[in-house]
Structures are given as structure tokens and as C-alpha cells.
Image 1 (cartoon, one colour):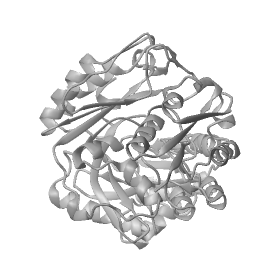
Image 2 (cartoon, rainbow, N blue to C red):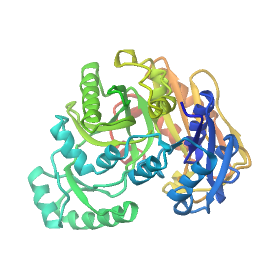
Image 3 (spheres, rainbow, N blue to C red):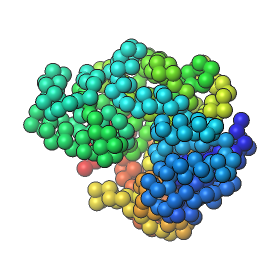
Image 4 (cartoon, rainbow, N blue to C red):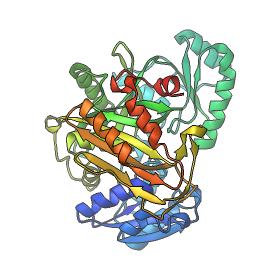
Length: 446
């Protein structure tokens, strides 16, 4: 096992990784920008180094600065968390050449699965269902129109690279195609440096279901059940739960087998997520694979009892998985609400400011992952997520009641947050009944 790990991230995920390392007796190194000099992750780690100014491009995304920090401090491994360098195959290769372990998948499967067109072709060959659509990059609007007429509207035009809901446009008819094509191309080029697009049939009334998998270097691949991530606004997740009310035991087993087959097809190692769309007829289609730990991993931890970050560390150190598929049993129900610095009243405008008051709810089955403390200045340079409120109950009804109570108790003051919106969301009859899909917020929460 590693003696020292550098955490190449910030905020709640950096704090989460530092705590996992500390529980395993591993020393930690935090990196931070000038804007994050007083951030909680920089204070919790055994060592902290500034790697640049506030701009992410000059600090957290500065690969040479991050790698230099690892070399200077004698860190044997780098955990990238999610975002920033987490799915950067070039950086993973740089770590390999420097004899520093990258706590994530090897660069080749990361690179391959980061290309959604390659992933679609590979999944089809592995027998994993994919949505009807293109297997190669679109070359023109005319080609997109021809394919859309073939598979039938509505369709989605999507970026072949990247993720996070960027470079995606829904097209309901041919009159919208040219605008959607140009907008998605420009957004993808700006976000990922890759403007390639593909087209797929839009799955109506879909549930966004993802399966957590983890694989070691000894040929073991295990899935840890699903998470329902259908509560989205503009392709950004706001709430996740596990297990999904849309799946029965038979469908869960089939999708779990498909997720494991997807990981095996690309020689995957470490933690990852295989994402599917499920329609009203319980037909499921591969959407993409995220080659990193996910924001929403705590709900899986709550229902399985597995510490995914610790397991990532063991796998990266060459150890076999500490469990088999038979050991994974889903117990109870978990829900996660993302607490963001944003103003829902003004179209979810991002906010920043000083944390003037902070009260974290407590009690059985309540967890709050964050980097918040009173007096901390929330910087305007990064993602608006402040933390994640997670609850676990004996069943879904119990978990919903526990989440409502926790949302009514939590206090984060000094700037606008989405706490009240999340409370409205979990109190909505449609959510309580479990009868929602990816269009729920746009349709019901105007």
C-alpha cells in the first residue's frame, strides 16, 4: 500500500479522499490554487502546496505543476477525484513515466471510453444494447438530417468527447437541426477542444440509470448495483438515489451483467460507472462510461457498506478486490442532494460569498460531504457545488422522510443556495411516488 498520496482536486471530493487515506494510515498531500489557500482540504492534509493562481487552467489543470508537486513531496500516487485531471489519459501516462501511480483506470481504456463513438462501437460488439444512431462522427448537417430521418425524431446530437452534459442538444424536428448542430459543435469545441458530434435516437420518458463497477488487475470485475440519476436540470444531476424504483430484480441483474461486460470489453481497472437509459418498456441502452469516481458515489456506499475510495486505493496498489459479486447485497435506500451555491429564483445563477452560518444536520443515516466551514470565502472560479447531503433509510419512504428532515435542518448562509429547491423536489408527489424521468424538473418544477 502507498505511504503518501497526492490529492489533485479541491472541495468536498478532496476532503473525502483525504479522510479515506487517513483511515488507512496513508499520508496526504493537498494541492491548491491561491484562491484556495485557506480551503478545508489544504488544512486537513499532512502537506499542502500551491500550484498556481485561481484559474483552473493555471493550477488544478496544470499537469506539470501537479506532477512536480508529487515528485517534490515524495508522493507515490495521485488521486484525481472527479473533474479536472480525472479523465485525462495524457496525465495518466505522465504519471506512469514518472513512476507515480494514477488512482484510476490505465490510460488506454480511459482514452478509448472517453471517445463516445468508440464506446458505442465497442459496446455493440460486446452485446451491450446501444441506442439507434451513428457509429462515426457526423461530417455535416445534411448527414445529421439524413440519419435523423432514418431513426426518427426526436434525436440527440452529442459531443463525441467530454461529459458533464455539455455539447448536447435535443432536436425535435428537421427545422431545429442546423441550429442545434452548430451550437453543440461550438460548445464541444470550447469545452473539450474536440467539436466532433454524433447522433442518437432520443429515448422518451427515460430514466438515467448508472451502474457502479470496480475492477482490479487480477481479472475481477464487480458491480455494486445502480443509482438513479434522472433528476436533472439541463443535463446536470441534482439528486441521486439507490436503488432505483424503476428496476425490478430481473432487470437489475440483466443491467448489472451488461455493465460488467462493458468493463471487461475494454480491459477496465479501478472504479468506473456504466450509464444507461431505460425506457417505459424496461428496455435499456448504453449511454456512456465514466472512467472515474462519480460525484454520487456515496449513495452506493450507503446501500452496500463498501468504501469506494479505499477500494480504489487498494486496486491502484495492485491488490485484488476485497469482495466478490456474491458479497454485494443492497440494504435499505439512500438519497443524495447536491447543495450548490446558486439562486434558483434567478435561473440558478451561480453565487459566491462568505459562509456566515453553517449548521450540518446529524442523526442516524445522515452524512454531509463538504469542504465548508464558517468564515470560508467561497471563490467564484470553480464549480458551484458546496457539498452533498446523503441519507440512508430502511426503505425508500424512510429515506425520503429522513432527507426532508435533513434539508429542513441544514443551514448555509451568506449567499443563495438551492437547499429550498431540493426540499421542494423531494416533497413533490411525483418524486415521492417514484414516477419521474429525466424531463421531470423541466416539466414539473418551472
